[in-house]
Image 1 (cartoon, rainbow, N blue to C red):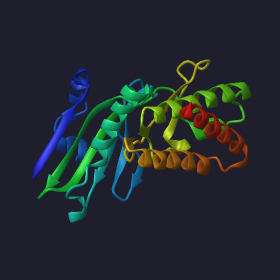
Image 2: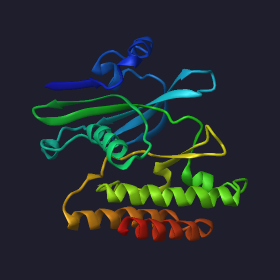
Image 3: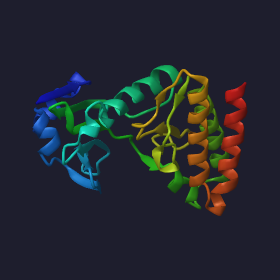
Length: 237
């Protein structure tokens, strides 16, 4: 059995210690925080660290690969991929992403057994789909932010990065400065940098088709069509 645990942000060591998150087993099986989503292969936990209102929090995403399968023998775990993709998005595309605090995985006889990633929560954040559907959102604010979203996608594609799961729920709007909201991309475990033109074109198709699917609601369709058109033109330019 081999276990890999990497603390990416050493400044968080004291907080992790206070949360009893020291070893790999603490992260994967310790039960810290509150479960906010559950899936067949694991769960995501919300862990407040400052303020009773959870104004600052961590998110712990855990995957469990059980029963063990030979299909995971040569497969990279999603948490390592997500950590690397966040770094690539930030470095090559200039895209805002959550800070990765820690990540790790465990293999048994070479096969994935479990994995986790711990990220810092995006402050004052809402999902982009919820923000677009909020009738209290100013129409001009929507137009400005969607134009920024188009630029973000074009910049990401020009850098050769493709998200591959670019759904509206995987885009957060940070309202720390309400007059200047910031877009963050999250849940990027399936994409990555692509260098072959055919794979790049396929990645672009996947990103824009996922976006279009998420914009099928009547109120969103026109906005998403604008994002697709503008981002496509700017990426080509």
